[in-house]
Length: 238
Figure 1 (cartoon, rainbow, N blue to C red):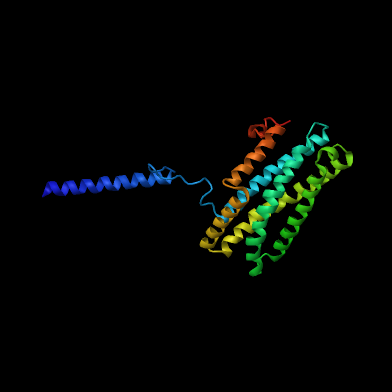
Figure 2 (figure 1 turned 45 degrees about the vertical axis):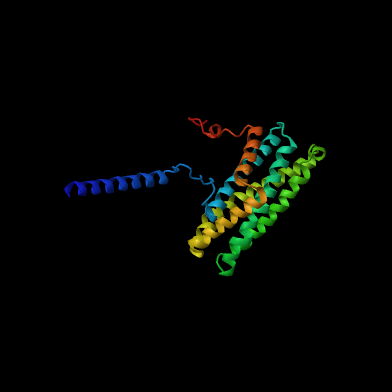
């Protein structure tokens, strides 16, 4: 009887230990044999999804800034740098990311009469951004790109784009998106996240976000601004 009791206790300890180890492995991202691995972007919430897309926009702003620097210093820069970047802005930022905000996020605040002035400003800036992108696309073509007036229009357009979108996205990240958590339930936010992923797949195919990041990285490499370490300040500063 005592022997049986000890065996039962030992079995319980073994099972408990196995369960604990399995839980730790799961928390650490481990997978069971034969278990299908999740896609990297599965389970991403609505606000996290939008904020990581702001990361793409930030890298685009850096590309525009480098293109403008080359204009000023009379260094070589191809029209494709501006045209390809503006095309990414049109497809990923304006026709996807901003449409999500306009169709799903802004209406939630407008229905409840929250941050109404901010919503109006953000909508106006979205349209202004589209107008500016059109200027870049129109001028960043082979024949027109070499003309001084075209380069001037691109310069003014990119400067305006950078100046507007830095505070625009910062206000969304620090005011709009945090306020959304007080407006919608966790369940509704999760539903929006799933809806955003479906829309991303519909427009860009599987791993659309990752593909867009790769395209931006390709432009960064072309301009020589991909290596993150080059932006580390060297001390002492002079």
